[in-house]
Length: 217
Image 1 (cartoon, rainbow, N blue to C red):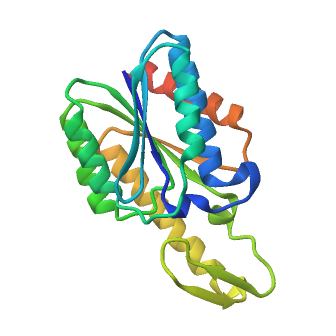
Image 2: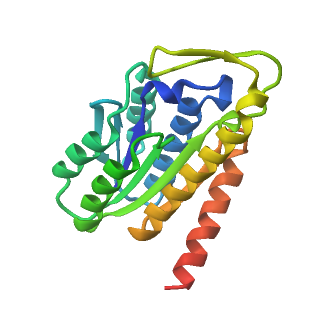
């Protein structure tokens, strides 16, 4: 059984059109579900923000794709994130060994996230993190006077991006390095996804990465 866990919190609302984080991550989830069912394996979908919002029970029928996509279409990114609590609650419901695909920007407290992942690993689940970030978040390519509006906190900041760019990129680089270290410590796969990239290329890179890891075992 493969479990898809999708972050539908407000921070996933960032971006426009196909590059919006939630839209991109939802398409990834639907694509993964289809690929899993084509192999005759069961797949489920859970959505969460500050609590578990919905759950599509496991199935390997093609009708499951319709159920998954309908649930994804109904998801609204309006609430804050409490990722660790949601992951712990979900883990408490899963008894046997499964594959867990987590799709999120993972902009959360890494200490509590690691504790939740360690619980998953203790239960012998295989865990894969798809860290979905917008190109702006990764490269901060803004010019002129810009107003930044918080998606999960009611805060605004109007400034010239060049004043912030160096420190922002330093902080983002350090955060991603810390998340990668967390994954390495806990033997968890992590795939960094830029929503400006072609999704087919992202999955091709991931499959090549898995192939290299499997050859090294």
